[in-house]
Image 1: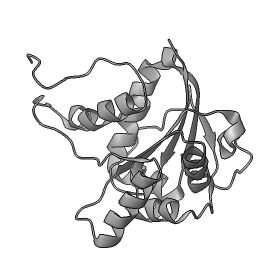
Image 2: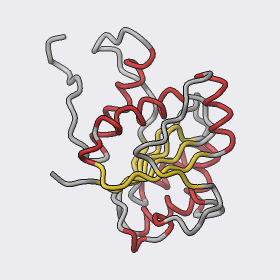
Image 3: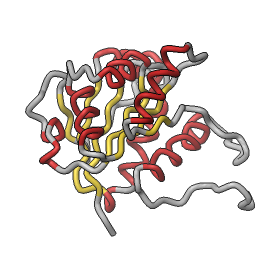
Image 4: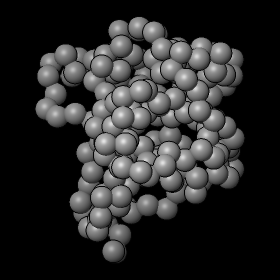
Amino acid sequence: MKRNKIVIAVTGASGAIYAKVLFDKLILLQDQVEQAGVVMSDNARYVWQHELGEIPIPAKPFTFYKKQEFTAPFASGSAGYDVMVVCPCSMGTMGRIAAGISDDLVTRAADVMLKERRKLILVVRDTPYNLIHINNMKTITEAGGIICPATPSFYSLPKDFETLAATVIDRVLHLAGFSLKAYQWGEDL
């Protein structure tokens, strides 16, 4: 089974639960992960604390990088990272990616993914969208990125917030090329 080199970026959009569930699931999928680099904005850490309280940000098996740490391996295409997930992705981050502004490690890594024709998945978490948001989504999609809104599904009858968030994260992980057991439409519950 192929082991992925993955970059996870957590920005300051509301929805820290999505990042938490993503971390939890990647820990369970460690056998499919070769390397996992993480970049969290200052706002992401604030939102995590505000929305999740004292739940710690997991350290292992992740390697954390600072926002301005341009020596991180995934700041270059030669490092061969397979996929980047920005979860949750703020509209500001999405706008900078769409405009090609690589002013921090998150936007630089996203730029690398697009230029190398590798998977870039933005889990946007905002509502409603304005025309600028929609045009930025269009630009990123045309450049090869995937917009995967943090829109949970309900047909699996999720029983709590984490299970509800997992309906999005399972889809993200499938898009990223991971193999995992998740509810599919038509399955018996």
